[in-house]
Amino acid sequence: MIKVLLADDQILVRAGFRALLDAQSDIEVVGEASDGAEAVAQAKRLRPDIILMDIRMPGLDGLAATRKIAEDERLDGVRIVILTTFELDEYVFEALRGGASGFLVKDTEPVELIHAVRAVAAGDALLSPSVTRRLIAEFAARAKEPAPSPHLNSLTDREREVMALVGEGLTNEEIAARLVVSPATAKTHVSRTMVKLGARDRAQLVVFAYESGIVKPGWLP
Image 1 (cartoon, rainbow, N blue to C red):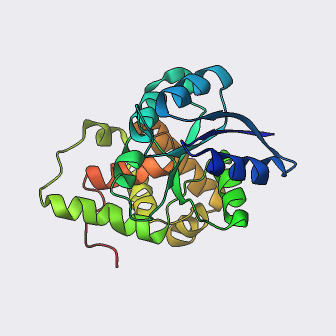
Image 2 (tube, rainbow, N blue to C red):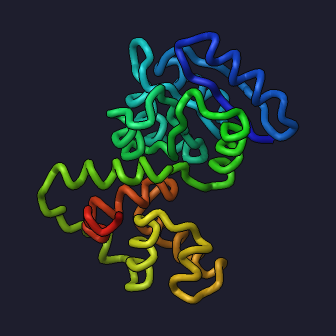
Image 3 (cartoon, rainbow, N blue to C red):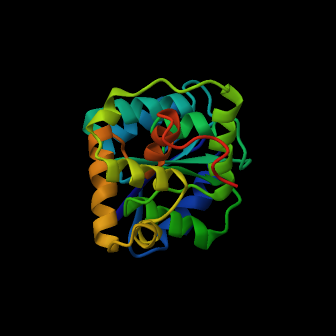
């Protein structure tokens, strides 16, 4: 059973998501929060698998709440999906950088919401092509050479190669095809790279790939 916490200041939004998710045999909404502080408290108390987190909430916003939850080692198993009204929300990048596993627009199709919850629970990241492009744009706008990361020294050449492919948005199957290895081997390389860099999931690995300079703006279409 996938346990979900809903964090949104709009009661109708929470009610709609609850009705949809509770109708699934493998998903249970275990709690609701109307602001970031309550979301953090509920996360500690309920230990959900997934938090659907709105960014704009009174008091402690979703961005700050995401950071607090991601920094708490006791909540390592909690995955956060950011809810936003607009796909190109100015805070999406910072939310991913702060530990979110991806994002969803609030008017997403019901079947896509259900798929997203299951995908993140399985360890996947929710990064649409438009968000990947936004990540690139964010780094391109800074127009400065990234500082060398000491963590990169712990990676093998193959792990650096895999990290670059994750940064391009490739799945394990696509990485396996590119490197001519089995999907299981590709998954192992991705997992080891995440462990060495302390990345919570693939979303953070994408961010690290750009911040370290392994993937540079302009490499992707």
